[in-house]
Length: 146
Image (cartoon, rainbow, N blue to C red; front, side, top):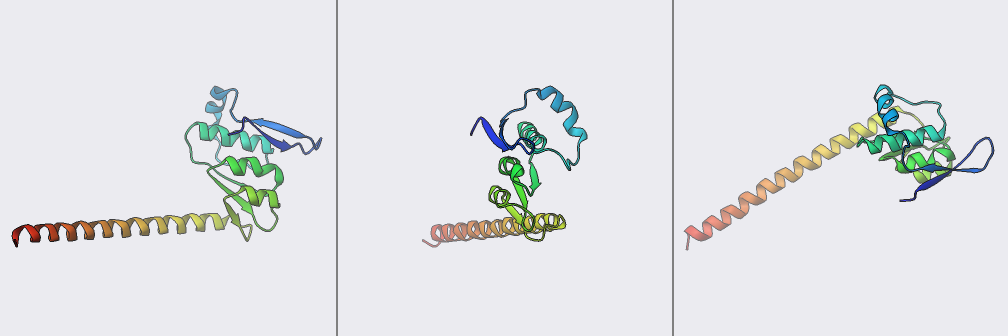
């Protein structure tokens, strides 16, 4: 993992390197639990929040549409990019692209993902149970019938 991640400063149009750790973790730990949503913030703030939450063992999802959001999208556990208004850099850095730029799509995707996960888990549990019973039946029959 790189120590610093470049982000283009919107005022000076020069690259700014973001550190891969928060310098004052105690101050971050005091305030991050009080924050529910970060909106209309600088890309550096979004990236710092992602780094801090990952350091505290949280699962992090980030939405973004601009080039400066790419480091946070890439570093987060799940990155959601806007498909219509988002830049190509943001779409490349993200894990999921919202084709309609609607946040309700995130909720629907999570619901579908959980449903699919539960269905796969139930199927594997069923298959494992059936296979164990079949192997035990064949084993016991071979012992008692010989």
